[in-house]
Length: 196
Image (cartoon, rainbow, N blue to C red):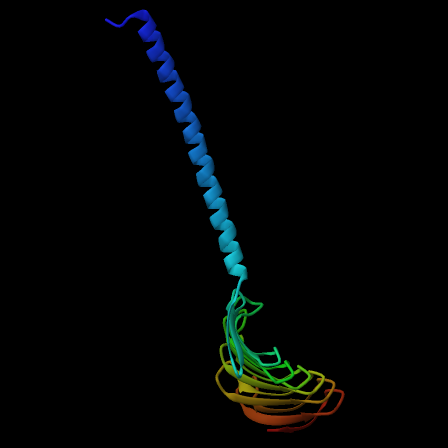
């Protein structure tokens, strides 16, 4: 039989152990939360960092922006990454840093190749249109469409030519009637010649 004083001591010791156990549990939970916060912060920092490899031609940089090549002057010459439509793309730049070509997927996931002049103005595009057929467009230095070569919705070839204001001046291809022909328009858009 346990004496009353020993029982009191045992009860007090058990209470003290339970309090210490609760404190240890709280410390463990707080430590675990702190470790998770540090790992999350470290992942954010790691995502913002880039890896750089250099040689005599320039450098290669890999980071959250994608993959890029820089020349020895520090200008980006090639970029492989995500475009503004969240689609993959490859972009090539000239020695002055102006993008001269883009090969990417559009916001509709259609393939696009764009060519730009030395001022960065788009001058040509080769792409799949919304109907799912191919087309080539040419633009002037003010980015006005000057010619269009493509396929109709029935896969028949067609060509359109525009003046500097963007007005259609000539057409060759299939008409909506299904016949093939060509026509010329004046500056007001009135057809002045047509066959058949």
